[in-house]
Length: 280
Ligand code: PDD
Image (cartoon, rainbow, N blue to C red; front, side, top):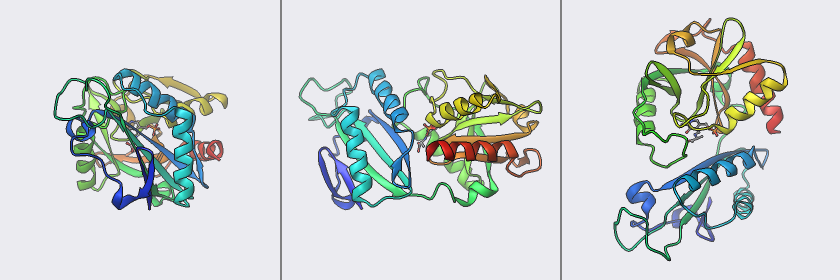
């Protein structure tokens, strides 16, 4: 497997960064994950736009233009003969000479790394069965709109989900679902309204969420962007999550209680097909 580090393509085992890298010491970095389907990057303009926004919010200058970053992503996909999977990219504020919290004075180049992984998102078993989710308190910081590599809260949330045999953790703040550990959360109400929380600093503005909302609205489906509670989700017709790595993924139970009949619903399946068509 070939990875990219600061201008070089090299075997994954040789792809290394300094122990003084600020990504490692302070989680002072931003990441993106874009899906690859049939060798093509999916919705990548949206991911690169969010990358630019995230780095802007932390005053981190990208070491390459987003056009160049996309070229590197494509070259990495080609070098790995990747058909279906994802490209991970991370940019950090680089390796300084020590451990100063404040930004490096000057001359420290940001670190840019990328690697790919294989995943058959379309035929993933959970695409057919849906997933269970558990709920956990949302203990993250107040700038969740920035796709920061500081993911400890999500690591703990998703580990708790894994231990419970669930596929995702929905995070709860003030009685309302914010989002999943690595996905956006949706429900379909009994009167056929798609509900997902509005973008704000409380959630990451999901690229898949944005595409699904637009695709649903184009088809005259009713969409409301507002918070919803676990009780409302349990009373809903359907529930699902969206992300670059699952596309549209049915949620069939929450904290062990089934949503509707405990099977992926027709609207979820339809939106998944619509999204896959859009992606292709
Ligand atoms: N996670 N919310 C959070 C907290 C996320 O980490 C993600 C993505 C999403 C969905 O965003 P998008 O649709 O743009 O993938 C929502 C990626 C996949 C990850 O951390 O692996």
